[in-house]
Image 1: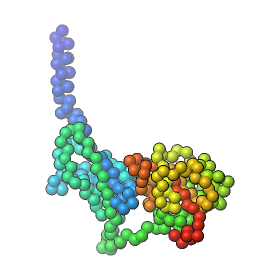
Image 2 (image 1 turned 30 degrees about the vertical axis):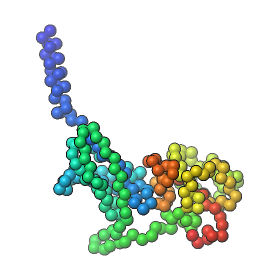
Image 3 (image 1 turned 90 degrees about the vertical axis):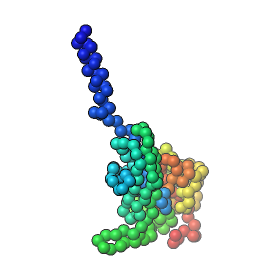
Image 4 (image 1 turned 180 degrees about the vertical axis):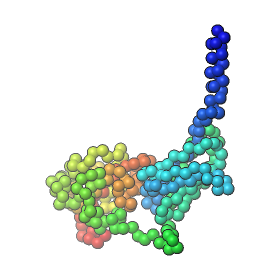
Length: 248
């Protein structure tokens, strides 16, 4: 009996010491780093958490969706800063974490700014035409598009479109592992309630399809409605032919 009591006492003692030996740090900060102008994610942005006075606490890199999670060792007050190449640094407001189980969510939006390299200042210029939400951009993307893959750019003369009666027919040719939410653009303008499956092909000059918004041109990465709350969404762009499309 004395051995049993000794073993139980030893287990109780270890249980009492466990929080000291194996601390559980549940408090954390999570959020996203977004482009302040177009709303798209900024992949690989550096996120830094510091205490008053500038003491560095933790550092993390945002993923392809601009998302990050930072776990902290203790509660307290923190500053959060995001930095990315070609953007001005962005700071959150003061964040207080009181409880060991607190989880704070933040959204950091960065604006483009000058880039300094070895004494030279390179000021961000307009987007490359291949990232613009214009018909001219579509034509440039079609010139360099791959025949297969998760990002497809099709013209009316391509096989997938030449025999299709509506956009739904074209989609049957394309990869099916699309995101749960799809953002649709017509002539560069988001159309949140368009029934693309029945959108007739008459007058359609081109179609762009991106399984993930991170594959899409920059100006098509805004979630719009109804995908604004999603971390990932598929992008579908429809271009109609017309006399005003020539130089846009």
